[in-house]
Amino acid sequence: MGLELPAYILAALTATGGIIGFAKTGSKPSIIAGVSVGALYGLGGLQLQNAGPYGVELALLASAVLGGSSIPRAIRGRKPVPVVLSLIATYGLYTFGSAFKETL
Image (cartoon, rainbow, N blue to C red; front, side):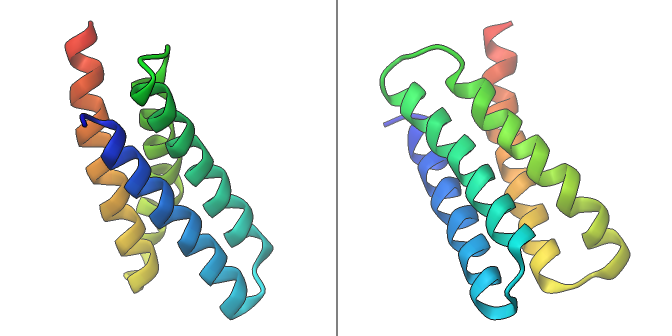
């Protein structure tokens, strides 16, 4: 297994986090964002597993979307959830960004 495993793990983490956020607070944006970003990671992982096109790019896009929404909130509020999401996004940006850089 290569990059598909991290993609699947990040898919599960983000989707589960969105579902938990909805269950705890009733926040529709939490479930929509969590499941959407999780789906991007999952689709990227599936493409990577099947040697399909744009697998790394999809996972990198998911990391960029997650980071773009969570990093500013983590800096402003320093609350646990945005900080953890920022760490997940940073890991994804590094992992999939490094893989994308190798394709250039």
